[in-house]
Image 1 (tube, rainbow, N blue to C red):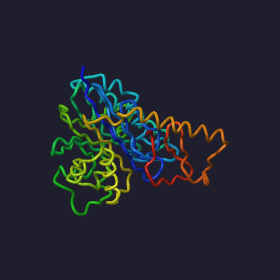
Image 2 (image 1 turned 45 degrees about the vertical axis):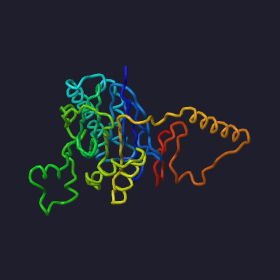
Image 3 (image 1 turned 120 degrees about the horizontal axis):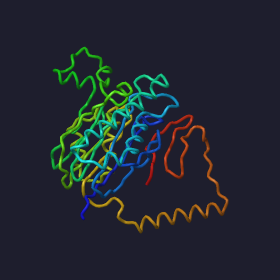
Image 4 (image 1 turned 90 degrees about the horizontal axis):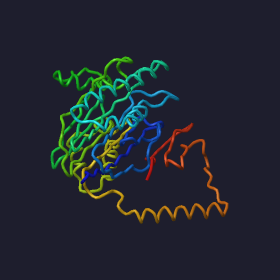
Length: 328
């Protein structure tokens, strides 16, 4: 049986550690608060998938970022979110969000945290049919041919005023970005109902984009469409989206996840990868035998690096200036 193939590329830039943004690819999510030097890229085959980008509405010292907690909850519930049909998806997602809202709301109460919660956009692909669910200001787009469609709904005060005729000139710009809905906003136990897009039958060469408001606050849809349409690699497209948002003054974390239906597998040359791994292993072994140790000149001022996961995690004095790797 033929199974569709999706190439996934995700990259983030964090203004500081721990990261405000997170993401989830099926049941995989980065360690809490980590960011990347290089993009995470995967080629996936199957019938059902869940992809998500999450964004914290508030942060607190020594507390798990709500975006990371939200991504972990999505990963833990991946099977439930995937093993369903489009007509039952609404009930499954509503139940999941009510539980997730309770988790975040309880943590906020336990630590007396204000506005502790997460925005999210989740792409559900079920047997070739795509649906977006979202709350907050994480956005989802579909590029099909030369047409770009926004599949998500923005739940900021600004969007609410736009729907009512537009904000007045004397509206405070900061207040316009206040979110009216997000996971953790409702009281523990209260039902949570997200926005659902119309179902879309996935076609070959469709490109989906999930991105945090660090991109959509700075790049108009026309520019997003132009960048997504570039004839280059997905990694370069994602890098371009982030770099242009930063160049235009994005102060928030910036995350972009691109999901392309079809195309060449991202990792098709396994032999080459094995040779690279073998060469690295040989070099490490030689260094160990020779008694060579690599020392950090100023460990207190640099993020701690996990060799196993290939991630950079928060340290006492974080000052990241580039993307940090989750995995190759």
